[in-house]
Length: 403
Image (cartoon, rainbow, N blue to C red):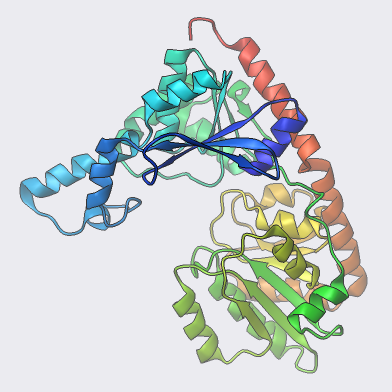
């Protein structure tokens, strides 16, 4: 979100970030110090709070996941609540008032496959504001109402911003959206922050010898979705074929599957695995971990448009990644873009690609250089800001006055 804010501000836009929380009772304002942008936190509606208090998991796929066991008329009532709750979460009246107070000229939603996007399109229609949305990985729906409303709201919005060609084809096929409403713009990255640091100092801090070869991954510990089981299997093969070398696998992150990962590592007794079991928000800390590495790996089975490999590429790391959605867009030129793409679910192919880069220092340097050039030309704040300004300006100019 703040990458978009940075890019929009460089393109001449003033930005206000609106969030909704059940923990506040009145609108509150804060300043995001790195960007100077205003964050306005709006209170959730009383009706949503009442439903939310009954929920075990607001993001549950089924009624049982969301509310627990129920039967008969009780189940029917909970099913209705599950469908309407996401739409009640956006306090339209309060949001409209704050949009007027801030003199906002357009709305940009994070994700279009969410109920909040539908509500913002309705609000934009009433306030005569153009509504845009981005794609960050959500291609699923939590309620039956979304299936009914989403085709209408997507066709009624001013435009959508999608980086992935696969997602563009899905949206066009499913919703019949015209190309003029779609902009292929990549997620922005602040290259002032994301650049390689001192390798020796980074390794000293982690107690990693200078002669060791380090493969790094960072993200959420979700064993299946993030393909960490594939990575562990690939790492076992990499080490087995290079038994005489000091090889390290650096894992950064935590999540719902920490115990599953811990058990798997314990059973396999893999050497050279260093796991930092923390959810790290400090970009400087993440950059230091990346600076200590030689290769970045992305073993995911599913992604929307992954940011983690971009951060690694900006730090000059070559990438080995599966062909998950979004990856082919990031590494559009294959090795000329700074990485090697391998099939999902294939630990042997991943092991071969990692090994190939580990065994060839010249290739490793060349891929790292190409990776940095790729993010500079396509993902910088300046490049993305120019494209956003052009698309939003063009969409506003073409917007029908009666829409």
